[in-house]
Length: 387
Picture 1: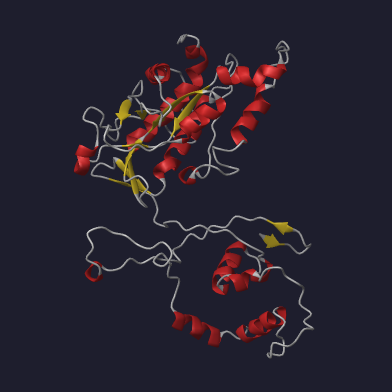
Picture 2: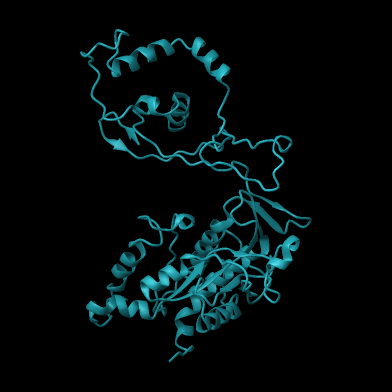
């Protein structure tokens, strides 16, 4: 948050695209424990620099003494004895950013934003691995990257939606609204204003449900338009799935070991940790069968997702009965909205590690699958009947 010259406070985005911090682990020679463990309070401090280098910079900086004097005045200590109560500095309920945080960090942020450090009122910063994503494997069949869970699904869904609208007439005979929702904070419970467990999606759907399909649409009972829309809608909860790890093959159910580059995974759980049921599985299977059958797929999307294959292969995942099972926002949204839901996602290795792995072909498969879902849902929904 930056204070402008006119006194207004403006939010700005900042991205420091270089490594400035490092969290070192203890060398294995000094810790012979069988398992790796650490104290989150005392052993996760990042290293930003050397104290000696900081002191040297202070000595060489002609403005450093002046900055100390300014800080002293703001704290009411202009004469250095702590008894000066006549400071002319404006009252501040909190210490300024350069006092609450390391001044060099604030200066770095200010430099990235091309503003003065004194104008930064507050900020929120997150650490991430600066190593870029890359292709790997003997045939470049893998993607090595941070945050594949769940940027992979977000990217594929976005391109799938764009591709489904490549034909200017694609919506002429479509009775549905094509929508994707990309939420924050799934890994910490989703109970935030921009999380899936908020009112964001229901509020958006409620607004959209009362809009007429066209100027010639007959007037409907708007009091139940929202509920009617939910009853005819379908939600694909697209989170990443677990690929079989050849080093730990025994951890997987014998007949359900998804592999990378063999298509998206439908996730099933009898305890409703996933929201998939049989009608939803049949619907997605039909979308996968029709993928690639519409002329012009991928045109104008900015990324070439066209291919020689027709149809998208799918896989199934069921966790072992003696194993715990993660969950997704699928059951949460299904319960809140009453919308038919299916959980699916591309298979990956090393989920939740700082460097994850997925298959390159699966990105193309997922884009095609989402594209087909948007294009064919309206016609397929009327052919799959459930009492």
